Image (cartoon, rainbow, N blue to C red; front, side):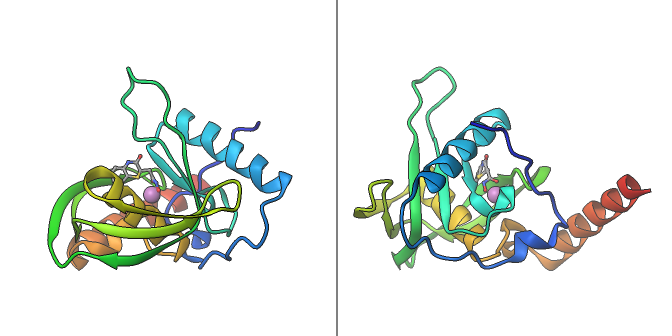
Length: 171
Ligand code: GNR
Ligand code: NI
């Protein structure tokens, strides 16, 4: 197990479209372990592999509360099959855009297919935080960030703030 560095805006790798996983290997299982370690350390409730610089369509998630037992979820090649017309607002944050939170409008309900760690095809219907988080993570696998769903004014402001911070850090 290893703690991996989380890519921060404006890292261009966050805009890559990740590649589908073809076969579930020991290396892929190691990647998933590193993702959980990194996600719990952050701490975050979800992580896409591209956030640690690996452009594979792999997502880890744990929505359990702090005082509850771990509830590890792994989604390989997740794909939205259906989303509800009904939409709702939820406040989102992202480990790649630290300390910025904003309401995002998304479909309330989604049906998602994915492979589990045994390579078995699964389907789930998600609502609430699970639906929000799945859409947020599937966006990451497509190079999309939650700030892409907010107003251009707010997006430009946060993008500039992070660009400036990166420039200062490089000096
Ligand atoms: O830790 C996270 N919390 C969160 C809250 C609301 C909606 C989405 C998320 S995902 C985020 C971790 C992250 O950046 N995953 O990509
Ligand atoms: Ni994120």
